[in-house]
Image 1 (cartoon, rainbow, N blue to C red):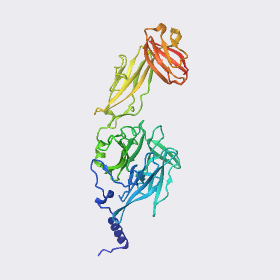
Image 2: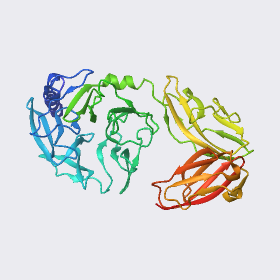
Image 3: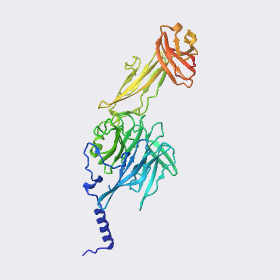
Length: 467
């Protein structure tokens, strides 16, 4: 007979205990009936006048569910509550933390990250799990930047929404000894809109992002494995409506998405997304503008030979799927002297007159999705003279806001006028014959440079604006 050791008995007891504590399938998620592909409300009790929103989090074993209840945005009354599966039943809700919201558990559930506002800036706090519950929350970072929706991954990376640029971006926290750096993930995750609430999968395989611009929906992006992410695409019409979807959280098995939906009243919803997450990864990605095309300059009679960089547009289905076309920004064809090769992406040609061309380059993928950008080719004349050399007149000068430019001896010529401030920034451009009236109302007082491009010549003058 095989000898049974004490260690074997202890192992059996531990296994039996763990098995006894497993939540029955029909008791998971507070025993609520799981949804299909259509979101339904996840019932969470709240105090009178409060709403169960701003992200939930669920422990890895499914036995603890934490959620926020708040009164409004920005929240002045907020707390984190929780349910716990104990003695074969769900117990709660209990109050875990007063004055905090947006709970998120660490990978091993030993730390809870949460949020409070200091001087109207979202700050991350953390609490450590102990034998009696949770420690008093402490501030995580000393930075004055926003640290919103702080999250930890299995790769021991940390992500958050912050403001290293003008708008809130999804960022990665870089830690080097005692130094920390909040670094934006850049394009295409972040745009000129505000990217705020988000969820990143534990293995960093995908990210769900809320974009704070109409239609205020959720988008999904996939990790490309090189530190880059795919162009976010809508998570689908079953989830996204015209109402408002935000505050995402996905369960550890990637089966269910929890999110906030509402406008005048808010609720936490949940929906089955495991198949959706997989299928969306294999549908067409819309190409996006990665880098602007730099403006080009040349002079009359000089050959232009410029190649659009391959890094200008990115198609996550493969850049070799893009077809390029080029026209003037007004929709007209390029001038006859300028040729664009759609295969090599090269502009070439020689202009015999001074002109400024605004060129729109469009990239189209095999599914017909397009992206475009505009850049400028400026052809300068061979000579530069003062305006008065041709009796060109600017009046009144000084002006209180509106100026008139008359071409004098160059009447009947087509001219391009360019008005710059003293820092060299172009304020106004216009094309005219004989005379033009230009509105400068609202422009800062000061001296402005007037440049006229006529035939092969540049004429330069100044005007003073005094409002």
